[in-house]
Image (cartoon, rainbow, N blue to C red; front, side, top):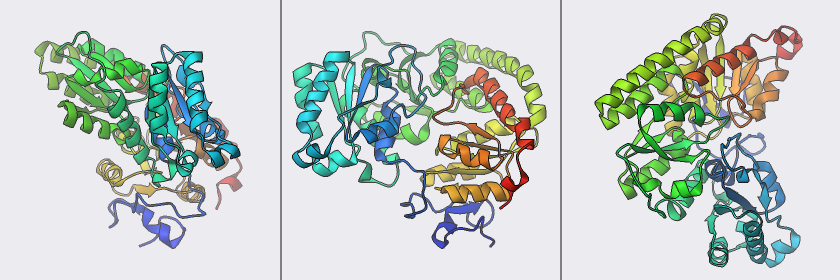
Length: 452
């Protein structure tokens, strides 16, 4: 069988073609040393889950570099506080490494409480604080007693695992152990829900929330985009969790089902078909006839509003190819949205995918699609040169590889500034994809850039 691209022998099984024998690549393994993979660590995974809580301080207990590398890790937006945008670190130095950093951590927590009076202070362990053995839990407990503020330890030492997925779980555990269920709601309704795994990147939540409120559900908490810690504290009394980013947050939904008996639904608000299916699933769950009728009217109106606006974009995008190299959830959840624009997903890959992610990718892509695990920069460049997609969808780290090779690029990760969720979001999505694919600048790039 011809290899997908030329690469190291040990990397060959990390790439495959659906329908060509091996349809799920080898995955969830430590990266090959020296291949300059772009993975993040356990600490980064925990920050992704918790950082969007807007009224909280997120304090990194480690060298200042750990904080700067993950400060503002997502473009998560807020309609209220912006405290979460403060980049806070204990700035551990050589002296702290030798004598320990617990005193410094305690003093920093007290100072931050006095300065900002936050809803909570999340304290993140890093590799350095883990190696020197600081007892973060004990310091947080002492600081909480002293200040009266929630001080929550997050045991997220980066060296715990090669995959940031464990960091997602640690972030979820921090909420389960210290926040969820710590406050009773003043009143409840039969239609209370939580939105789980929605981080309000570029304002995606604001494309979903009005639709849900219009069908008649009451959103108690979003975990964790545009949220307050006190809202999450009351989230244990809802009737349903809907889960958007299933890679980072299925774990939390399953734990809440086990602990509080809350069922969950997997939803996807990227793309028309998926948005329609998600709204119907939620209405069907509650089984209220008025809600079901109302939902159908909202769907009819939403689809009608979108069709005219995307007509011109579809004409230009029809038949174009797209390569996805994104997070595990987006690597499969975006496929149908591109097909609705007439595009063909010819490659899908992720840096930190686990087997379940690749099984979902395999389910949704057509035969002949390349599936890639943890591609490094050289491999990604070779894939783009060999297969020449009309568009690469990825994050900021892959942006310049793509542009330097003359391949149109669209950001779907942390640096994205346009909301893509829901009906109106799909119009923005189509507009941005078309702006990248149809830009005349790529006709001006030198052919030598495109040759191997």
